[in-house]
Length: 137
Image 1 (cartoon, one colour):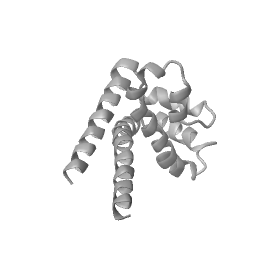
Image 2 (cartoon, helix red, strand yellow):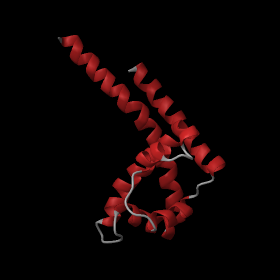
Image 3 (tube, helix red, strand yellow):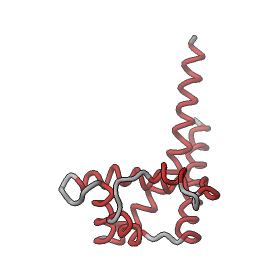
Image 4 (cartoon, one colour):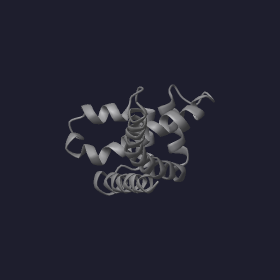
């Protein structure tokens, strides 16, 4: 249980560092992101971060943001998209970002930190599961 809390805190720290990197160094703002999402075809931010040349040197700092963006597109964006608000969930989320900038800031902050936690927590849980399964054999 102790390691579970430590892993969670490491994820929070990684997500917080990624958020600071995105907001203060790269200067991506959610209203700008809304305009970008409205004008694009369906994409995955995680795949684009691995294939993009500009991101590769900063991949570790950009990855929680990319995971959080994909997660927000396919949760909140999908809910909005079901109401026929765009051509794909990312476009629907972009329209919401344009209409409600405060909500856009909140979503980006929460989902970037959540992306850091997910990136750290899932491999840890898989490792624990494998360890438990091999211990029983």
